[in-house]
Image (cartoon, rainbow, N blue to C red):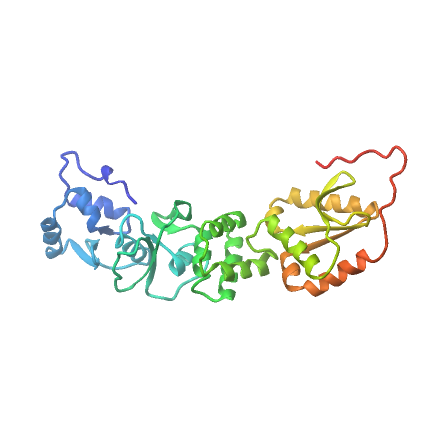
Length: 325
């Protein structure tokens, strides 16, 4: 929100100039609680309403000079109506981030606390707490971050609509899977977690889970399907691999987009795979989608590879140790 100490005149007495200065920074809108902070009494506000200098937009929110609305003034008005901690959210935030246009005339606002009364034209989302890391400012309007906006919309939109938002965020270079993961982790119990995970799973073949979750999923599959358990994070030919069945040539790498965020990391992993294959190993890359939705196919592949009887070839005399960078 605007720092009100910079809009009071030298005399210390607020007037129309100071109100206009504040309104200019907020798309022509001011809140009653801001006018109070400026030093205006209730009677002074009411006099300006009667004189046509202030026009009531919402309870406690006024347009300055005229009441002609714009999209951004409508967003700002709705946020101002619920105090300093309120932010634009859900469908309205998606629209402001250019992730998805909203045809609704209502504005979505999220505010921490449970004591607020709704207002016409505003869809109010009251939450127990709103983490500061889930909030930012875009074009002077307090708003949920892109990551929090995706999580919120996963509760109110269809999954395909959320997938398109993810695609658009990527196109605009606004998408950050790490940020989405962290947002999900600090908002447990949200109804949007499962549908958002499903959308991310289809988009990147991995939802916002850690590497250990993927490892656990592989071990559970092996246990359920009576397959031998691999050694996790094993060293093979000087490289650390995600899973290796000792005495065999079978290696599994667990693919997660979040662990290949740079092109160099992606290329380095594939350089390692090429080297191991040249040494006679079978490197099988598995994604979260495959481990959870294609278990039968994964099981058949692992069982065939493990049952092939192939063993690692012995290194030649004087073979140099390979150090993983």
